[in-house]
Length: 448
Image (tube, rainbow, N blue to C red; front, top):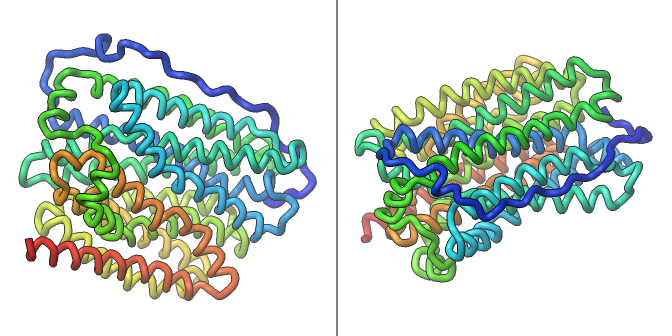
């Protein structure tokens, strides 16, 4: 896949700005909002975000080392690509605070519109970037800036819907409704991986690297537009606003939230640590490992990952039923222990040929679905009502930053230089962190 002398890339793209529109008036309805309707908004919003996320993640492995880092060998190029990949997660928590200020000054609709148009524009602009052979180092700088733009947009896209859904869910179905937003991850991966797999199977290597990889980024903008209107249709209703006000789901000053409930933010992020670490160890990392050290068809391997994501959907759905029966924290703790056990088999499976690698992907995705299905907001009930909106957003941002941002970079670097056993230790540390955080959270509850 590595092409050191080919010329890939072309022009840039201008961002679309969001007008100060009357979306609230256009979409006003007089109907009540049921939990099921909130769930639809959550699923649509998260699926579009994760599609953008995985389009970039897959391209970070299959495309960017060749077109933006042709001066490096394949391993170094992939590590450079993963370093830029992590920038979005660094920018995300800062952006969350900035966009909450925008929300307080203007409105939730304005904030959401700006964020989603920024996401779509940054994604499309990446597809139009000239490559290193044309722009030199400026192409890498532009890629990094646009990746930061994606992270900023993700930080601004927090709409409070997951918290609202959890608070409005029937008492005996909290786990079921909590998992609905998490369906966006495997769904987004299936669509993104399916597009890349099809393009790689149908195009020559040169055609794929010249223009084929750009197509999924264009699709991402169209999906963002659809998701934007679907979410605005719900967000702009008086009933939605009433529910948010009723539950005090408005931004609170970050300093106040951190000062009063910073412990809950840290515990909440660490409680989901193993889920977020495993997230990239079954999606991005194995793709890079196979690309670098195996002769398997990447299109075929993506198909295996798509099947794994299908099992992930089953796992997410099952997590809702399991959590409602045994409790969300018990579910997370049990899955953290299972992930710790699974971590010990990584070297055997990844070095076990096609059968071992396929087993790693399928079992890993199933565990991911079961764990990730309840990872969001595992301890957000600890937040006081007036801090829940900001606290939930910062908890999510911190979980992604600590658990997922550098996972592909660290895992590939460790595996390439020291062996796959160190990837096992990396995932095991995440599982231990989750168990420790859940235990600490339980101890604090008992003390209080």
